[in-house]
Length: 584
Ligand SMILES: Nc1ncnc2c1ncn2[C@@H]1O[C@H](COP(=O)(O)OP(=O)(O)OP(=O)(O)O)[C@@H](O)[C@H]1O
Image (cartoon, rainbow, N blue to C red; front, side):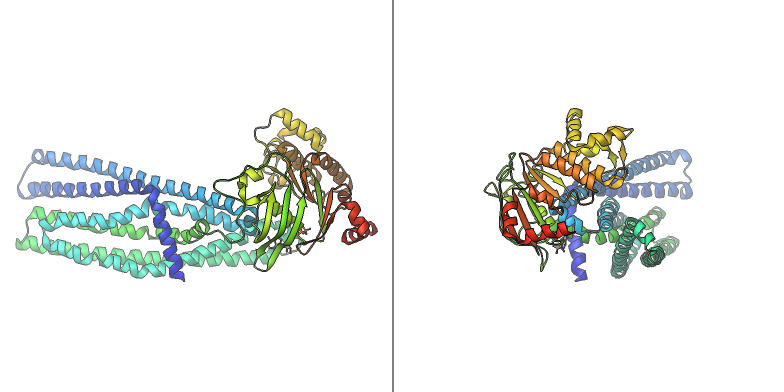
């Protein structure tokens, strides 16, 4: 199973090379060119040393060789810098592309899927995980090619000069990759464990930050501290075990490289003494021997880049290739139908969808929402009211039944175009960090100041604005910090006005407001409802009295539907709910 995950991750990493092959090949080509130049440099140096030490040549005789040596060193440095640049460009491109696709995958899976994910997990996977790919493409892959190519070039140069030294290098070279493979499995497992521990630590930390007030008020801070300390300690242990394996493998690599170089040096020394090899050739091979092992040692030092990338790639591959069943949002690549600009007529027929196997959000729901009508949905907590709104937004695909808009199946519309036709007012509107103006303009970024003022007046936000010294420029914090619940709801109402969408979905927008604010917001909503198809989830049943249709839900099903007058006359579930409310 684990091997499967690793091979999926490796395959996925290989697939990502496709778009950056040109950059990787350029980096590898320059690396190879650098090695050829290095061989020439070694030849020049060996010749110059031979001339000066054994043939009493003067400095002027070796000056051209010295100049050539310096020139080649400069060209090699330029090759190395450029190869690095190409490598980094490859890494940058892969990261940018994968990040874009990850965001696209989030969008395609829809808000309902996102809401079930842990924020810390998402951040770690999409920020740290995607970042972990850069060193793999920028440095590891070019170095991997160099570790194969460059020793071959050195061997080709060394063999004609001294075949014995060439043979020693040839025989000892496989020992390095052999030990890398042997230690590789251990290193990869350690790296996987470290990645999982990091995800857990991130989760706990983020969760603790978000629930800081709750933890403090329940006196649970100390316990949480201990838990975080344990997770940090586990992460430290896993990191140390990764480092241990990394150091051990570096040690083994260095040891073999050193022994091989020493063997070459000793052999060259003896053979020079015995006169079996010319000084220039012996010196040439001696200078090349460390360079023979250098790419392999450098590859060993970059192993962690590969391990981090493989660990992150498993998650990314799953995210980018698999869409969880039953959570595909409304989306077709080439939408057959334009989303309507006029108030739509919506029909649900025997609709069922499940959040998870056996956990139905809606079950067997059949409803007719006439164009331009207002439907108020009531029912106990957990009866499926919000699920109905989410289905209409296209965040869930029915596993049974159909949703039709003006006679067309909902999934025939493009998801974005459909959302653009919806104005949504939730229980607690989400306000972003930014100014009040930015937050209202979210509904229509091209809206001018006149349109903003009109929307503010209609939503009752103008009164709020008068009390704020900075007016539209008032900065808001996270979750709308700086405004009360009622004020935030007016911001959301102003957004809905500005949006001017034909379908209005309201999820108990007065739920968390005091009587006075709720009344004011309800009045503004009554205005907003005109000329639109409206579905409003309501706890306060007075909203239902003015509706064209009231729908009563229980356990994901519609148990009653009709005009308020009909339902009151029937003395059924709606009647009982009203009685209960009046009694309370
Ligand atoms: N994200 C989710 N994952 C799993 N089950 C869910 C999820 N959201 C809702 N449910 C389940 O679906 C059913 C309907 O929930 P829904 O939120 O639609 O009810 P509701 O009537 O809007 O409740 P409330 O009035 O409390 O907001 C409930 O049994 C609930 O537990």
